[in-house]
View 1: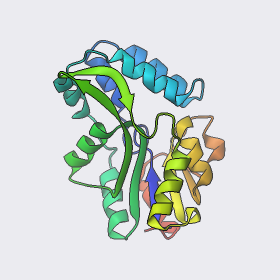
View 2: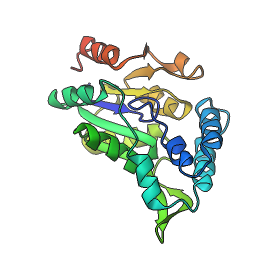
View 3: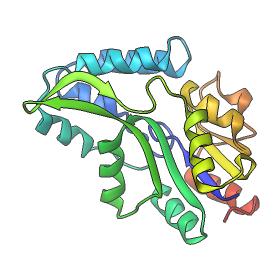
View 4: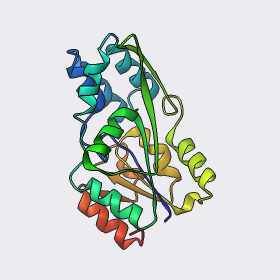
Length: 211
C-alpha cells in the first residue's frame, strides 16, 4: 500500500470543527444536529455543510480562528502519521471540514501530511460570510482519491481509506483496503476492518505490511 487517505472529523480527530465554531456564536446544538444527520446519510453532505456555514454568518474571523485552534488530533494519531511518512507512505487527509482546523491540529502536534484536500469558509471584512468553498462540497471523496492517485501514479488498489461517516463511503468503496474508525451504523457494512483506537489502527496497518 502506497497511500493512506484519512477522514479528519470523527477519524483523526474527535473534535467537530463546525460545533466548535458554532459555540462561538451560540449555534452549537443546531450544528451538532445537522452534522449527525449528515453522518447518518439522512441529508446530503453538501446541503448539511452549506446549512452549517450559513449559521456562522457574521462570526468574527478571529473568533473562528480561536475555534480552529481548539481542534485536536486523537491520541496516537500524530505518531501514526509520522510512522507512515517515515515508511514512505503518502499520507492524505480528505475532509469536508475546514483546512484551517486541520492545519492548526497538525501544527499543534508538530506533524505534517503530504496532501490536504479540504473546504474553506469565506471571509470578508473580517467576518465569516456564511459561504463555503472547496473540492469536497459537491465533489465526493472517491473522485478526490482517484484524482490524487492518478496525479501520483499510484494504483487505487494500493490505497487505504480510513473514515467513519456517510461522506466517507465513496472513498471506502474504491480504496484497496477500507477501514472504519468507529464507523456510523450505515458505514460499518462497507468496511473490511473496523477499529476503535489509533494503536489498533497502527497494528492493523503493520499487519497488512503498510508499516
